[in-house]
Image (cartoon, rainbow, N blue to C red; front, top):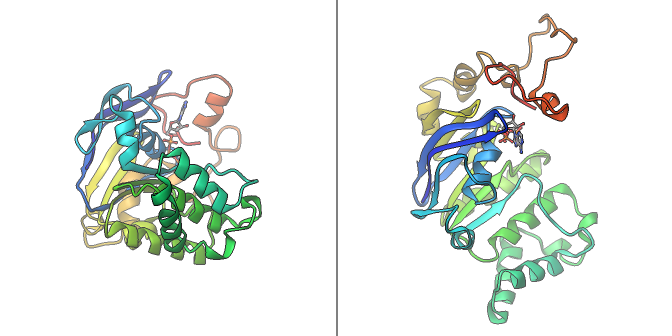
Length: 276
Ligand SMILES: Nc1ncnc2c1ncn2[C@@H]1O[C@H](COP(=O)(O)OP(=O)(O)OP(=O)(O)O)[C@@H](O)[C@H]1O
């Protein structure tokens, strides 16, 4: 249902993704796992047609996303890391607005709004201005918005980022429910999230696939935590907290690829620290 074949994305001279291939069959909940800066969002943005790959092909239901973007968009509900909402609107107005923008017929729009409001438990805040909503409610509203047109594929970038433990629980439960009838791909760097929701895990590290299989296969009889460290932590300080007595970098802080880019320089491609 979702397929990446030899995907690479080069920003300037920096390779954010290198020869990434995987395939997610219909009806699976797959987690795209990796440390900060691994390339997860870049891959999701390519799969949803928001970025063009430098090389390779992203396919949704067998069709090349770059060439059939509108068709792919009709099948996908994409929730980016920062949920795009209009703060002055109420959730009801927003859902109506996006439903109309999606071209939902009037006769279908109201029942669909009712259904997603129920599914995402938004009843209590329907008439409140969005800027007054908690992060958890905003996240659920974002989900409701992407579910309006009943997409068969849901792609979510760190859907529980910044939520409190109760909100995380609610959103994970919602993801599990959605996964019963849809194909879901979500990105995360949280191992408990993988354990809680995923049938399939694709681990990405420094722009390459480091593991592709079930969470149990990845854990290999041990813990996911150990496996994650083994597969990504050998040279990445972001994959595990620094030991307390570790020496600081030359400027007293770890160097950062993000700073290089902010200063208009490209980070060392062979460098160890490409995170933000
Ligand atoms: N438009 C861009 N121009 C230059 N570099 C970019 C651009 N977008 C992403 N990158 C870099 O590509 C690398 C991968 O970024 P990406 O956002 O895909 O990582 P991620 O795995 O989603 O990270 P996180 O978990 O922190 O969100 C990072 O080093 C990032 O700084």
